[in-house]
Length: 465
Image (cartoon, rainbow, N blue to C red; front, side):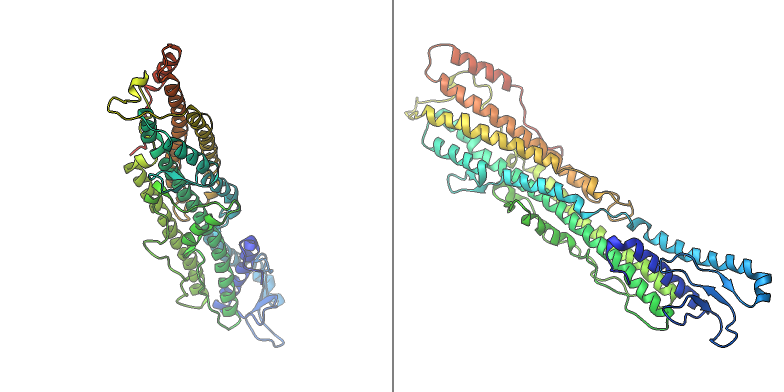
């Protein structure tokens, strides 16, 4: 028998058709003497074996030619050929109908490039909470720049720096951490679906193979176990873990604000672990058992995808109710002169160092903005419904949980773009404010006022409720 793999489904389907026709003929009183026989017989092996009907080939096609003694063939041969060919055709049609929705399941490899882009996005956004005032710093370029901002701003004081700390430093790492957490959720949802479809393809192939063996056994007077363990049961939770083991070695643990999100670690309702054993082991019972096995697979897919859907909806709700963890408050707006940025009237010393400030505004923050742009582009590159498409009767319709995936990906994509805008303009605001501080000429003040004017109508992106 052909190996039970989805790649061999077409061949397996042909073998199932032949086995089903064998079982059907035996159920109608005909005999199949051995597995290599070319005909079904209604008599014994004596000199007058009686009537015979040709057996289909190994691919399940052909057969149905009736033969008997010359007199019988002369009078009824043609009509009997049509009768049995039509009967064979009905068996084949039944199998075609059962398998039709399952013959175009997506290739799990279609997810690979999209998953890898999301892994790279998590690397771009990876941060971890530090012990310095609750400010988030992390690995890679993003973490290094956040560390520069933390260290440089900690070496200074005054209203301008205090405003910057409260508006940016304390919130920026948290927001990036939130974005990182969302890429983890999206990436894990995608690898969960990838693993689920891989399991579904294996299960369908196994269902065909087991049905074939059982039908063959019945036709030859034996018996065979039909039930098998469903690979789709538990495939989602197993697939979630796969996201952490990609080629880039992405760090995907939730950190900072992202800790408010929920990873998918269990399903509310466990999927049935085994295909149902048929109630009867005759032709009709085994054919119904095959259909039930496919239905069992589908029920498990619906349950598994339902867990992914619910997790995505839950995390979208968390973003909607806690936008402060994924966005900045209006950063340094409506600042028209340095008196609004610092105040030493109460004896608070103003300590600032332009070289430290400009390392923040000219190096660290632009680098962070560039990394955010790259992360946004990677989220976009990893965003596609293409790998999900299948027959609408399978699982949660033709794209499974993709719609809910996109409902979360859209806000993330916009939040990252919003944050990049805020970082670039925040850097400009801080630099112009420092340049204006204590100056008597109007150039610096005019530049600050002009920049403030460009910001005054800005509003943060709000996630639709």
